Length: 315
Ligand code: UDP
Ligand code: MG
Image (cartoon, rainbow, N blue to C red):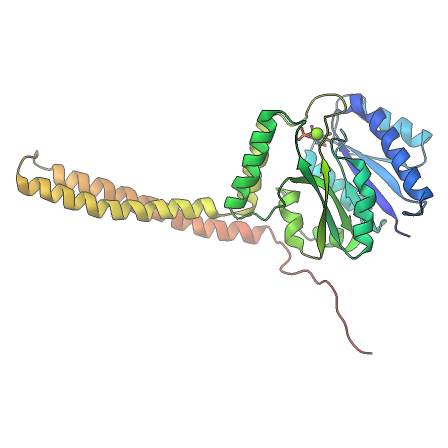
């Protein structure tokens, strides 16, 4: 039977936490009764440097309830890092880990389905929102625009999947090999490989409290997602440089024609031509330098070059 660990990052979640703990406790007990998971399965709440009573609540539940564990981070490191901390802490202790947000907007009843898919050989099972009716128009619009831009920029990501997923122990092991500081888990996980599948659910309303993702955090998160995975923006600059140099040729022809027709001020021709040419050349060089910086950037991440799925041999 599999040992399951559920990781819940919590930042100032005192309003929802008690409810969440009760619901997850019920879920775990149910799964144990059904013999789906082993008795030593657990939920670990990661307190991401909250300034409210979050840790006190976790601490109290840890004493009262059997399946509650806590991990307190020294300061606020953000959702992605907090989640990573939780996953790395338990990776040697579990067969599979499920990550879920503290507000339970993601439907916990599909965890069972995730386990079934894990047992049938999937190392990663993504929770995918099949609809987002409860999200405000603004959230839906920004979120979906975000997934589209990510795709355009060449980042591998699962459409409408956030950080609700199951990962096997070996997938966690592989994840630990990603040394980068700028974590963008939903982009990294699909690059790991292994057999994966999706489960679908409708996203719910936040239980209580407010979204911990302010517009500012959302924008910086999106920017992080793109710049952590893609050096395409630099290709755009280079492309723009080339386009400008081509435009310079046309500008030169135009300027020459105007010069020959005689109705221009002296010196205008050369100025117009050099303006376009220098602009294009500068932009092109900037993009070129960018290409090297991009390479350095990719190198310093020290990502694993490959991840072995299995090896077979005859003794
Ligand atoms: N969170 C965190 N650290 C932060 C911000 C958020 O651990 O600095 C957690 C938060 O407690 C929640 C999850 O990340 O469990 C997602 O946050 P939220 O539900 O506010 O985001 P939204 O669903 O609005 O995108
Ligand atoms: Mg939420």
